[in-house]
Image (cartoon, rainbow, N blue to C red; front, side, top):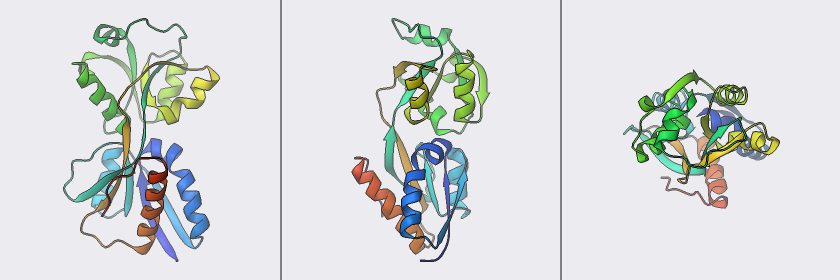
Length: 213
């Protein structure tokens, strides 16, 4: 009922998905202080592995045998541009011709884009990358300024699409999952269990429940 819970989340989750859950958690447990760190997926996994955070929420599968991971939510990756003139056909040739604005290596958004490109027989090395930026907001602002196209979470670009400052070129068909992380061997505090139970409740309500032990 009292204490501090350290949580780490990747940028998209921390800014757009997790806040409503943390507000509900604080209302139920007002004497538990939550300290939220924001890092990309790779760094968040490291923090959970090394005990700097007890709970992590990230945007990609983490290859780490020390960590338990399970899906807790999902969204979609959307290719966006500032120009309202949309292409009639999207294929490998078109993707190669565009100027791209990318998130940094290690981000879940970039990993999701790489996964999509592999399905098209492409890699990041095949694209013309003009800018690599360390935040969703930086990528979005650069695209709005005419730097090229980019791929961002539907949670991030939704307001810009509705406002008309960005236009959706293509939505990647496959869902992009968010994953909970905790260390397999370390003691799980009651506060961490309470937060994970609440995240699981939200996951059930949103149809994204995964196995947690």
